[in-house]
Length: 247
Ligand code: PGA
Image (tube, rainbow, N blue to C red):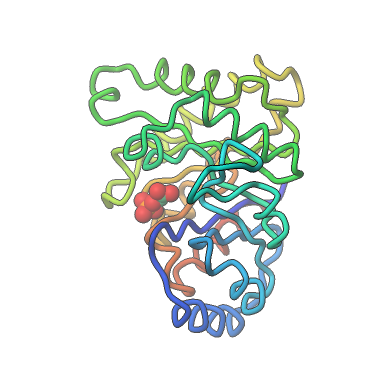
């Protein structure tokens, strides 16, 4: 399978950044063997669709309902209309800051999948949980809860240890690979043989300097990139490392 590298711009950006990023991206060599996705704040989806070439569009979240009196929410079919192919669901910031539960994550993932989008379901343990040796238990439980009745077609799993997000402290390739192996086995048990083929990407302080090592691991199929995705050159370098890692 080709590598998958997803930019998560979080609550960053402006029309000026979209224009500058698009211009710089177009000047960089095209990439093969890697699916490159950008998930900007929702209002920039239209502008990015026009300005970026060779990139897929994604969203950072979606509503757990299709329509109705849910002020401030954005539904999966609206994202689809704007050309989104992917939607990040259950990011640890959504879980910890907005109280999102596994059940809500699963509902969103079911809706996204039914709409033909790829749900990128995020899981990951806190530093406290890792230090207590509970990371495998925590991630396995989160996975099962977040994937209740979610079909495996189109599904992507992002392993993002919370202690590595935005901290500059990446999981070592050994730590990341060990957890990706656990997730792979979990997916196989849950979905049968097809579950083994679900892309599992890593997130948490991925940078051009550590990307190749991570992508060299057998079970790391790509990356979910926050900070380093706001700059076209560094994001391209990461995507390029993913492309080389698949060759
Ligand atoms: P980071 O964020 O690359 O800035 O650590 C990753 C994420 O939260 O998806």
